[in-house]
Length: 280
Ligand SMILES: [Zn+2]
Ligand SMILES: [Zn+2]
Ligand SMILES: [Zn+2]
Ligand SMILES: [Zn+2]
Picture 1: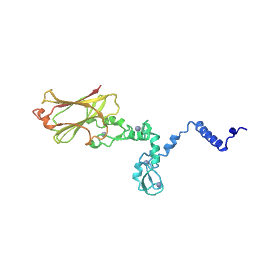
Picture 2 (picture 1 turned 180 degrees about the vertical axis):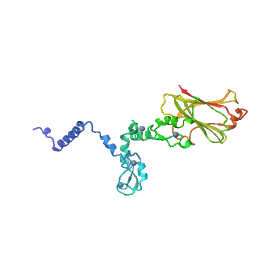
Picture 3 (picture 1 turned 135 degrees about the vertical axis):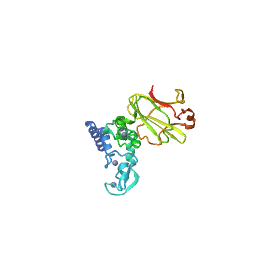
Picture 4 (picture 1 turned 120 degrees about the vertical axis):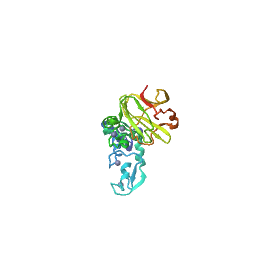
């Protein structure tokens, strides 16, 4: 008898076990191990997925950061919170594909954990406050897709509709409080504000509506006295910015007031215009 034909029993068992597993795997196409693993990431308090840093209680129960921050001890076992992290879960997080947490609102974005986290912070389906909430004490909250519709409906009085040419004049009258307006142009809504502060004339221009097939640019022109003679002209892209506009951190452009002073008219008005046009 050929010795080679004798198959050790343990090898046979190992082989058949593997065959069993393969069989199991192939026989059920709908089995989704990734989906099952995702369940391990579900925070038991809010049902959102946990993402790093994933902290835990003394025993090892984990919750999402938000919930972990709100409880004083573990809701499952009452043991104290600990400052250790669940690194094993954090490493798996990087390899699994997660849906965006605004999937129920309609977001179809899916990606590996870290990409989803960065997407979520700027997801268009995330509830966002009205951009004028602090300027106009507006309580509205909704997705970025609806910001434009909300502005048109509730802040209609602030919207300039003389298309894409806004005239601002006499900035001395505007003193030191920031003046702003919304401009409805090209089917989009833009935000324009200006302020005279510490010897500078500052201005901001942003696009506030999310949907657009075009890029836009602004042009601000200053005129000499009440003539049509342009003395200063600046141009730049109109960036999208739907969030809180009262912040001091908004990027802006500015001019030294003493420099602009020589262009005032007899009534101390500075004649200027703002244009928004499609950037081809
Ligand atoms: Zn949670
Ligand atoms: Zn616990
Ligand atoms: Zn999303
Ligand atoms: Zn509002």
